[in-house]
Length: 559
Image (tube, rainbow, N blue to C red):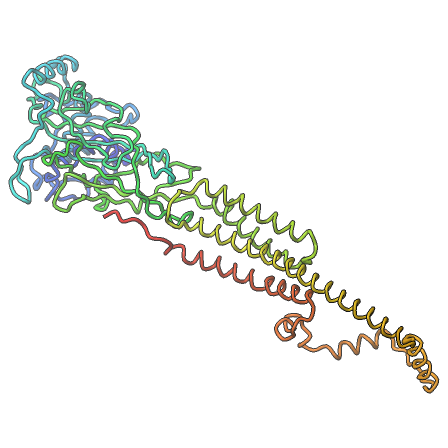
């Protein structure tokens, strides 16, 4: 529809003119934007006040030819004609603006009558033969005198845009990050200028650009990643575009492997993992200034995310609102850094690490409800410990080997300690039973020896203690009168028991008020205390760990 055409043109120009948006940003200052008066085709289109902007852009003014009004420059938009494009888009731009130059480069050969001009390949051949001769040296930097806020100085301004495409890998064990990026560099080389005319009739030419001097036709900046595992100079080669005013645009797309000092890692798996990438000139040139292009966000100058590709089913995803760019030194534009943050898919760690640790640790406390002299209790305890150890081995495989204490590592360690406390209590109880049993056996042997000694003494005096005891018992029975026996039913016995039972007879009360008399009572009391206090202590530990996650550990300084 006509109302959507300006929006599509804005997208086309944005993708084509991004590299030049910072080359001469001064042209945009002081230009007033007002709403277009039209209500149909021009709805939503912004118009520049011609009285304030000066000369406006014209599609065919550079070539000096006439406009072909009925041509359709974009086959995908059959309703878009060159006349409409000139009136509602190109004609609203100042003639010296980067947007105007970009639109002319894009639509001039489609909307202007260039029949009197040579073919495009002939034009480019002529221009290349005039530019690249013996006097051009690609090792010489195109240093120019510039007026800056800090005074007049010489240098080369390289307008820089880094586009994040996708994350390829993030390895916390080796502290490396591999991302797929597009590095777009734009600068001006006055040795590559030509006058656009009927002979030099190409607005742009393509040239070979490469960090290697032997393979490049022009001088190129040696921007590289300082904290690198692989150099940005190794990105795949691509051609550069040179315009008639000497502006060079060079974009390379490929993987970039960086060494990171991660922040946020101690809070794993609830961490927002951050990595700072340092960029600078590989030749340590102080005359090359890398200008970060303002793309609408002052916090992320010179950086943007690829708008189409959004990854799914990945462990890490970009946290775009935390992304930052800035220069390393406030007064220097030779080096800059890029801060990237990635959120971890923590559901996997909760499901397969944290939750099993909690379940198995809580299950280990069930051993206190089993008789300590039962062999099943010790087997159950050892089985839980082996499961916890296996879980820790699996978790350790995804954690970095470092001196810092990782949240997940500490959580699993303390969970294992609680499990080991249970089996330690079982072993102590078994040891106590063994010692107490031996003591009882010795006491029985002593009693048996005393009884045998007593029998020997009795035989020596000629009296039989068993007969005397029978006589005494028989005498007592003869003197007693008949006493009737009242039968007590089971119901009456239960009622009497309920009446005698008070709160002091509760097991938890007896645990703290009555002194155990036998080894069985001692062990039973210890088991009961462990069954109450260890689950409570572990639950408090879980609550504290999750509450303290945001403040866990210290991140390394990027300063």
